[in-house]
Every structure is written in structure tokens, then in C-alpha cells.
Length: 376
Image (cartoon, rainbow, N blue to C red; front, side, top):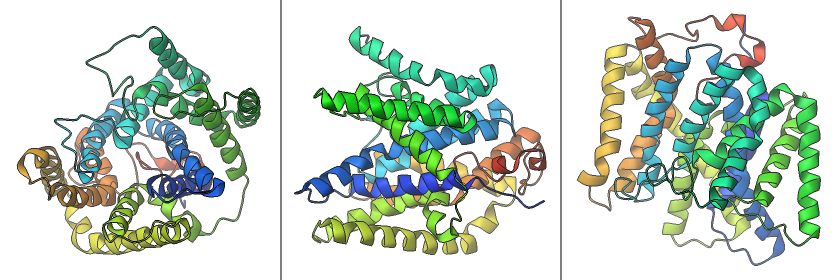
């Protein structure tokens, strides 16, 4: 039976990739249009987290929760490479970047779904409300600060709300669309009252409501059975690799001293990042992928890669750290599906890595739930 994907999720991730380019481009914002386009980029993680919430449910139905949690523990470590490309020593400055936020959010979402079923999506307001209560009560969590609670980039609270919102919108589509309209209306009332300011890092009600509205309405539109050409959702299907390549293109653009004009930077970044993705994918298929077919070489590969990522900040000269991290990040993004298979292989005591079948037959799943790897 041919496998199918839910292209609504790929289309949402494609939109998320576009918003990432807007957010990270640091272009000149000397007019209202560019200002609001860059502002829209701050909602890229909302789209990615919502989609990850949905795919975590799919994966929980095709493998045990401990296997999923093991993969995401490794995903958490491998994602530290993104901190390294910014030249930051994460041993000195621990950060919960987007990869760590995804790992924590997916594991927490899957655990809630395991306990409560798909109705766990109804809990989507609670992480944000808990975050607000802790902020109002000035609760300090020195051990967990930055990873479970702010201050930090993508701590579990309040961002878990968007994972659960993704679950809710997927399984309760009409209700989700109506609630998204209500969130949009509530936000507009805040704007009229002069309280429409959105704060992402110290998330406020404005950002939360606008995030709910944006994801819910876009998901509703993307769920319409459009005839979506494959090229249009290429970045969505390869969003993890695109994350690294677009960041490299923007870094090279700024290093070359090229003008930061929106109409130059945005299309050039999209084209350059996709070209990098295509090139790296071809090279990887020729050199790396064939060597990850069997568990032993695959385990050695991933062990070495994690070791390099963890020790590079203390053993590599600061000037070389971003480049080492880029190399590790590319290998991670190109081959994370093989890591998924390796974890599954070890859990099931197999002598060779599984192909396209999980330990339970994917043919037993509805079409929209097939062909989604853990970090898709």
C-alpha cells in the first residue's frame, strides 16, 4: 500500500521556514511593510511546535513512549550544534534553543497523550497559565530556569501550549477553527484598547492569542485539499536541514558585507538555502547514508557525532567552533531518520535497521499518519 502524508502539515512547516527567513534576516526595517513582515517571523516556532505536537501523537501510536523519549534525548544533544554555530559555549551559557524546546515539548506532549488520549489537546491553555502564575508569584526555579521556565529562549512553559494546540486543532478541527477566530477577535479587542503589544521571549497574552489565531486559521486553510506541488513543500519536508542552511546563507551574506535590503536578502536566502539542501542531500546519499544501514557502524557514527558536539566548545578554538558545529548540524539534519531507526532497532533487538516499517505495521495506521518520522 503506498504511503501518504498529510500535506497540510508539510505546508505549515513550509510557511514556518519562510517566517524563519524573515525573523533571522536582520534586514533594514525602515517602513511599515518590512516591519510587520519581520514581526510575522517571530511566529515561526508556533507553526513548528504545533506540527510537532501532531506528529508526536502519530509516532506514539507506532512505537512505545520510552523509545520516543530516547530518540528525543539524543535529538536534544545533537541540537546543541545549533548553539555552537552561533559561537556560544553552551557549557558556560546553557540555552534552551528551538531543538531543545522541540525535544522537551514532544516528550511532554506524547506523555500527556499516552495518559489522557487525544483529548489532552484540551489542556493547551494550561502551560501558558502556569507560566503566568509563576511569573506573577515570582517563583524562582534556579535548576530548571531556561529549560522548564523562563528566563530562556524556548522553555517548556509556556511553549508546551502550542504543541497541545496543534493536537487540539488536528483532532477537533471545526472547534479549533472557531477558537482561533475567537482568539483573533480577542486580540483585536486588545489592540483597540491599546494593549496589543506582543512579547515573544517573556510571552504575554497578546503573543499567545495571536499565536493561537495564526496557527489555527492557517491549519484550517492548509487542511483544504489543495493540489499542492511537491516543489512548494520541499522546505517543509526538509525543514530541519533548511534550518541550518538558511542560517549559513544569512551568515555568509552578512560576512560578505552585502546590503541588507529585504527584496535582495529574502529571495536570495530562500534560493541559497534550498540549493544547499539539494547539494548536501546528494553528497550525503553517496557518502554517509550507505554506511548507516547496520547498527554497529551507525552507533559508532552517532556516538562520535554527539561526542564532537559536546566537547567541541571546550576543545576547539572559538573561531573554528561555528564551522565544526555547522558540519555536525548538517550530518544530524541529513541523517536523523537513520538515528530514529537505530533507536528502534536497539529497542527491538534487531540485527539490521528497519526500512520503512516501524515495530508495528504502518499499514494499520490511517494514511495521514504514515511516513512521519519523529522529528518531521
